Length: 155
Length: 76
Image (cartoon, rainbow over all chains, first blue to last red; front, side, top):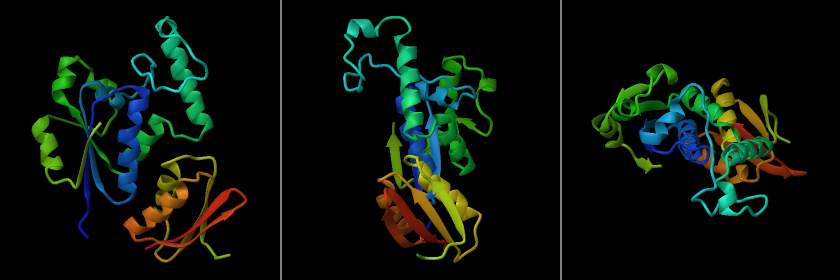
């Protein structure tokens, strides 16, 4: 059987949305898939050496809360940091890998990571802040791989 | 209980870590050697079955013992 291919577009940069691309990419690689993730717009922050991913309940009524908090309270300064830290603690307690760990495992498994050059320019990101071993490219670069993929996900 | 050459304790770890760690352990083993994985994640039962089917490594045994799941995987 020829090697299967998985192409992922990662567009979101919050803590919760950072999980699907890295969980699927690392697992696919373990299953023998040739895997590539294209990071664009807010997804680009997932490539930063120093991750500071946050989660927010604002605009997300489905987020489980330990106790009901009125939306007006959720907008208070410090609430996002508190929720993010609570979420990270809970994940650690439940044996859920950190994003750093999943990203490291993905790189070890030779998942190819491509940063969207246009977004890097748009947001004036410093490429020195990004991890090593990634490539920079555009839409055509993505299709070069995605066009031959067996599974293609937009996250 | 089946014999094994190497053991991986993935207790307390959640999806997809038991699979990723098992894959890593298998990479360092020889063909036909057996890896025993201990896991506590209930989802790992189906996942190790799927892992074996897709990678060609044989899931020789999959059992539960006092809340722990034991998998014996023979490297392809």
